[in-house]
Image 1 (cartoon, one colour):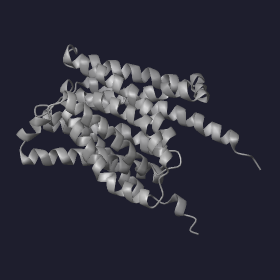
Image 2 (cartoon, one colour):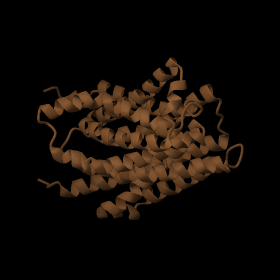
Image 3 (cartoon, helix red, strand yellow):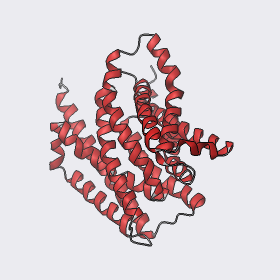
Image 4 (cartoon, one colour):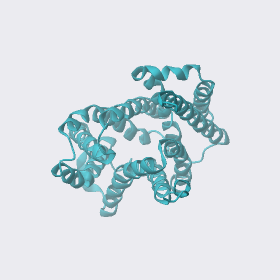
Length: 315
């Protein structure tokens, strides 16, 4: 056994982490590019099923090999409901907000994730006595208000609608994460995502049929159809897989923490593609918001580490 093995740099895990960052940074950019070609119901009704079909083959293979217990198909219904709500609200946000604003404000979901965990996991209440937790929460609030009100104009009308959509999307995304944690216990994460994505796709197709205008897809040029498929694969199918690989190889803390870099990548892309320019106040507020999210995750990790240490017998 090589003693230095544990200290070696994990190229595969780091590569997967970088890939997941790049994938998720493109999502607001892709969605924003479709706002004049289709409504959000139609975008959801096409993109999510494409991602689900991509993983359908591996899922069927796992089922034939007897690796998937039927109970997971029942458990996946709950996170799929939250996923559908999150996806529906998130998909409408780019019709009211520019990509960079979307990317930064969407990270407020980290706040809701911690707050929702109080309701599900009673021992999470230990965070209430953490100065790091309260500092992170305060920074998140300051950063969110700064991103909202320190722009070149005060948000009104449609912009306010977009902010509200992101807030509710963040709430549902927090519950989605908790439901996924419960549903995938004992099953490979990629298999779980495949099942959840199928259920979510059924919902997005139904919503598209009732409220969308899928006929507008026929008006798109072939190259735009290709972009639509690429957006589904990159932003949904590939992003999740790279994220799972990174978690498995280099851990949850580093992987989740580094995801806070994605809004900066989105902002750079939005500047060149949509000429979106953030004010100095917004850049500063965005950095404060992400710093607050990082502190929240750090405080939660400290509680989990302390709990695990208490349960570990000393010899």
